[in-house]
Length: 505
Image 1 (cartoon, helix red, strand yellow):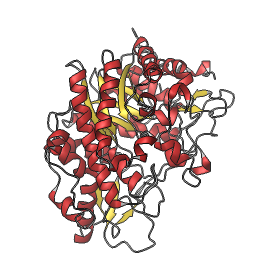
Image 2 (cartoon, helix red, strand yellow; image 1 turned 60 degrees about the horizontal axis):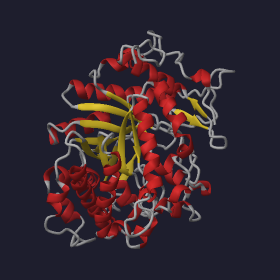
Image 3 (cartoon, helix red, strand yellow; image 1 turned 90 degrees about the horizontal axis):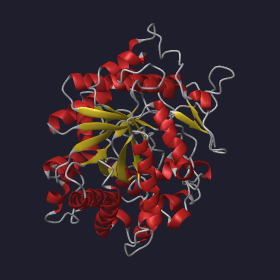
Image 4 (cartoon, one colour; image 1 turned 120 degrees about the vertical axis):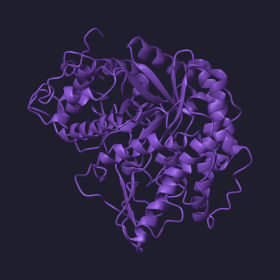
């Protein structure tokens, strides 16, 4: 693998072109953000690491799922992915060349606790030791996520997230990672998007473990939140007091198709399952009464025990927000209607008890995921969280877009990849964040999804979110034009010279 040497500076046309639209000018894009704002990129372990059986790692549910015929497009797996486990040093050098101030990554649970019984694998911890040290040496803050969906398969064999014991095992794992890395890692996230783990994994089945059981999905949802609580307690016990602990949620900007009462009620129900079923227990120590009533025909909620909600509602230091596209809903769905909810084409719904709700596309351009592009949804969720959790700092921990740019080369001869749609997408969403900050939202960082093209879950390698192109056959990385533009924004924010290098850095 090699990174194109002449891709390390920015000469993108909009980088210094003050005749470009305002949101595409790096100086304008950077102006709205405070001086200590984190400029980052994000990845996840199974999506980029590869080395699936290296150094004692055992299978996760995604190893099993991706090897099951028909589950992942083209039969792709994460066995090699972007080969980051081998190439992490050059990837960190690439991050430094972009001027990133933070990097969000996840730890692979099966690398750390590879078998039942809790034995810690030192070789697994050693990899993240090396990664964290490389980041710090490059002046990049590590932001560590403990769970980005790669549950050890042996835990799934015992019931996975439907088994309450999994929450206890997660707390033990969190404590082990904190004991090793807590002296250097300041930012800790327990779970990434527990909505996806519960409802895509256990209800619609388009994610691992691939089940179609709405009652199991609601059980898994609660045990995921309980696992968060167990991890917070373990982290607080192990980490220095100045460490910052968060959970990353993917709040939906839910909008009704019309003012018709059926459409308004559809929006209430989906908001309950997308947002309030997570935010209410996390922030207020309760489940929303209407969601309990809506799902009473699916489960009796007997898995909720005394003390659980207090465990879940331990104070957070910040909240991560992942946002890609708004959610437009109405009543009156008919059998056979397409489910345009952006969560795959499974035959079962990820929305327990909502088979009668129809999902529609918002107007406007769409990404390669067929997701409508509408940055106003990000503004809306940030302002909602400002009102619902005043004083809780926010980080936009994922935001980005997939486009069909794997063969769309840039200007002849320079080997770059032109991706103007991604650049525009990022610029519009940064503008929305800037507007939210101006209106009082305490947003302290932005992590573009994703640093690298990667294994995109059930889509395999067919969808590319990276600002860096990966040739999966050779491992070669090439900066896309969006990466050059993003580097120029970061440099402008830091008072740099506009070529991706910050003055004085």
